[in-house]
Image 1 (spheres, rainbow, N blue to C red):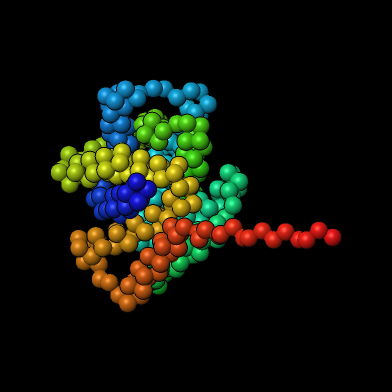
Image 2 (cartoon, one colour):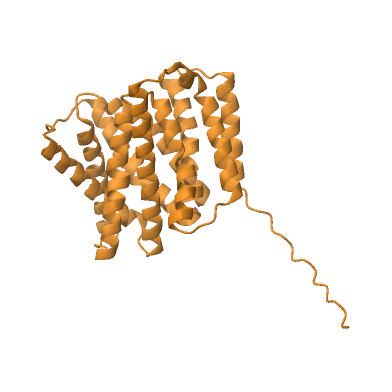
Length: 302
């Protein structure tokens, strides 16, 4: 089951970058994000009601859900989409993949979990692989104030995503299923975005074109309803450190989609990077060898 959820997360989130790119246009970014999560929340609430699982979490859980909604379904996407205005999307993907490191660190700080050596080693290999994958793009992009702005926004978005992972871990430990917390969190995130647009004077806009609507539907249902539920279920099952390794792997899927749709060309460094990413994936998920119980030797009585 874990492998299925992991593969589902990688495949779905590895293809949402194209849909995100198709949404950049006449519709302001906050409204596009609000539409996505309002639609996703509606789908989840309908499904919960149909299956008899619709309920309002208690006050303690709702506070955590509100914080999760801001981190996972609001602020992080604002940061990522605005970052893509200043730096190439490949750099944004590289920054997002550092969620493995941040999750391991934050789990140690906030949850008291030890840093597993294999998680750190696998994450290091994955990051090295991504650096090789995006090396041509990294070397072509000159440092500038815009670059620093984009990097800061991308890092801020990744930190928000990691914080949302910690909140989901806490909520699941309290007995709250991800599908329920996601429904309420997405509703809160969409509501905050819409209210923020009203306060900031960002005019309402919608693009009825088939391209925009198709991208919205894909991002809302597979990308949010299925993707976030699968990923946060993994967070509860595997821990935030190992679950976040999917963020290292799905840019590889995104590159293959880009090669098909946008004409991305694989290079020797990129192929080498792919090997490193896959090797890191094996290390992270390799189960530690069981240590046989040592034979007990009883010292003779003196």
